[in-house]
Image (tube, rainbow, N blue to C red):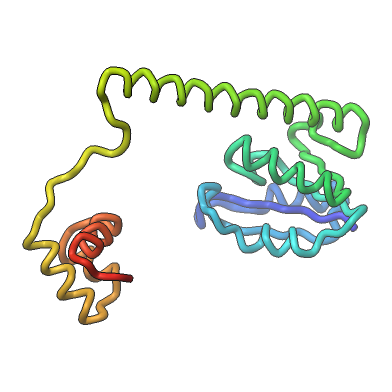
Length: 188
């Protein structure tokens, strides 16, 4: 079966161009959603991934509709390969694993991405080692601890108010709230 996946980032954007192109490319079913590529959860994409089977084809209008990062794309395309699912991107014609050339391009890109991840990891480790040698510590700088806000956070949390109400009323972030609760001995 041939499936299509279309996504736009905001509710103001229109899916028509992508859906029309996917139907013209032979998609029998098209899954679409209006949601940022940064969203970790993509319900319609997850639904599609749960439905595809060996021998199916997944088509997207453009690669960036499927995933925001190279790593995300490589992982997804590797999953397709393992499940023997074919993949095509209409705008980037070289991404067509139904052809030998498309498969070869995919393999080359996967190798380059793996090398990129390794190089970045080595650079990060080298940078951290150099910083430690100079007596520096990594991580986020310690913020000031506001005992009054911490006490108020504990009180509001014990009243079982929604987290969003607590953070809004105290004008603190969610992570700061959890830090206050931890430091005050409150187990979530």
